[in-house]
Image (tube, rainbow, N blue to C red):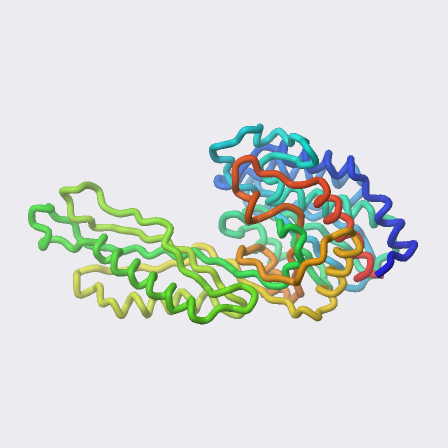
Amino acid sequence: MSLTPAEQKVLDRIDEDLLVRVTQDLVRAHGQNPPGEEAATAAVLAAAARELGLDVRTSPVEPGRDNVTVTLAGGNNPGLLLLGHTDVVPVGDGWTVDPYGGLLRDGRIYGRGTSDMKGGLAAALIALAALRGTALAGPVELTAVVDEEETGKGIRAYIAEAQHRYVGCITAEPTDLQTIIAARGDSYLQVSVHGRASHAGNPDGGANAIYGAAAVVAEIERLHAELATAPHPLLGPATWSVGQINGGTGGSIVPAECVVVADRRLLPGESPAEVLADLGRRVAALRLEDRGLTVELAMPMEMPAFETEADADLIRITEAARLDSGGEPMPLAGWTAACDGGYIARDLAVPVVVLGPGSVTTQAHRADESVPVAELLTAARTYALAAHRLLT
């Protein structure tokens, strides 16, 4: 579809040099999560938004951890939400460039968070700035929350105080600029097995918590195999993965405690509470109490899945905007990663699409993470054009 003069005017306001600079400034803001060091990134984002003449509001989630909301005012109709997060995973080892340097080389910006997802935040901010002066039917809001990489404290705090109605939400996570209409959710489950210590020379005098945990791990493996028989057409099956086991105090002591931590990926429509209850039933069927063991289950983190109909206005308009902004033809797709957009879909009943610069599969959470400048520019153009078409 061809651009109208008004649309072209908006896109002409997107300044590539400014987009690069904002991305670099965000990358140069030190911090990682855990332990929850978003403050520097939030401050850089808020300062850049104010310099661009946009309204900024910060909302404390925890001490030193503020959500940032940048708003471009519009009419009284529902607006558009651009969603992102300010936290990044720990830097880790193996870097050949400064992870906080924001190096620009051969058309790519390097540093922790360039793909996931400071580049997306910069593109969204520049899109808002380009829309200034446009008569919009509703506001455009960029919300950058804390703690997406861990337990979702930021998005849950945002949901609790959401102030606007929305026609849709574009989550600016790294999708290689592919339009994602469904994403798996995620949950962490913790199984604590309690036994009784004794001398290993008399193991029957105790109750071995590690043996009980081993039975739980085997049951989780069986559950994973069962889920593989019912894949989602875009997302594949739900999955289980045991990622951590901690137990025992020494080789000569029957262990009294063991903790298993597992990751359970969720499909659209699945209830995290029911997943927890189902595991509880399966563990109860193991009759670990017959071994003198007790078990406690908890779900310290849950992030819902979502799916948006392919013919929804948000999807049609966003995909057309992506193509008109220079994006390559690609099918609508699902995403096996999880993101905060699931909360928006579930708790605010707002249609969601995930679309952003960078790659979750080849760049995010890796050494020498980077994002192409060309993708930043296409993303900014897409967000601005989609907002213009949805709200004018």
